[in-house]
Amino acid sequence: MKLGEIELYPVSDGHFWLDGGSMFGVVPKVLWNKLTPADQKNRIRLALTCLFIKTKEKNVLVDTGIGEKFDSKLKEVYRMERAEDLLSSLAHLGVQPQDIDIVINTHLHFDHCGGNTLEENGKYVPVFPEAKYVIQEKEWYAALNTDEKTKSSYRRSDFIPLEETGQLALVDGEYEIAPGVRVLATDGHTLGHQSVLIMSNAQHALYLGDLIPTTYHLKIPYMTGYDQYPVDLIKRKKEIIKRAVENHWLLVFEHDPNITFAYLTEKDGKRTLKPIETKDI
Ligand SMILES: [Zn+2]
Image 1 (tube, rainbow, N blue to C red):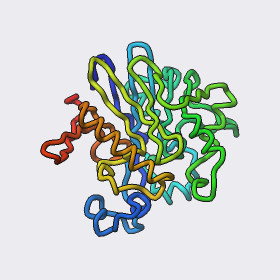
Image 2 (cartoon, rainbow, N blue to C red; image 1 turned 90 degrees about the vertical axis):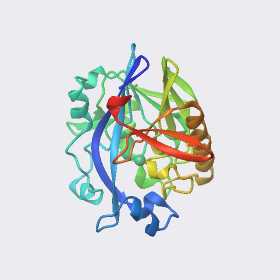
Image 3 (cartoon, protein in one colour; image 1 turned 120 degrees about the vertical axis):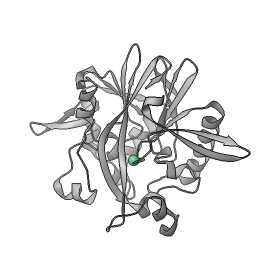
């Protein structure tokens, strides 16, 4: 799991199921259902794969999954599968919450930052006591100023406590978070969405977040109903796919239930996805 001198570990916060129609926007069910069959309630299974990055200097965690804060009714709505969870996945690697120096949230939708905080004596507190939480300034603004469409995607208890404890670190655009770990503004899904580019010894990996949540979404028109700025998303997706192909970036898919790591290659104008077993990296 080495990328040059940096170690990458996928860490799972379990799985959940979202409405297939919402996940594929204008794509008809007759097409997407062949790729990923829906359950009786029309939901498809999605992974909650976060990424633990170990550099020489820092322990970085990208996204924190869905967390434990939903009541039993919403756990059923989202058919949450919690056989694995973020903290026990980290513990398997010998990593305790206090060992994390930096948390990066790709954006503040509840399935990406649900594990930022937990309830303790009736109060929400950060799960990672020593960490700075890196969030794009525009995303913070969008999360605090929701409208009728975006309201149900944000839970204030996931991020407000970070400001109260002084752990919030807002950035604007591209930024080097730690040597070899850089955030890129990849807006479109939300106003302040960011992806994470990891670089070491001329090798690159990109954690996509919801820019391209599963391998099915590599096709340009395959977008979700949650995407706030679809026209911007198309632009970003094309740009990132081009850079990934040209520069041989290892792609990391957060929600794909089957493929976490893959390369995308292009020959004679035809693109091929090459999934990678983690032990092969
Ligand atoms: Zn998501």
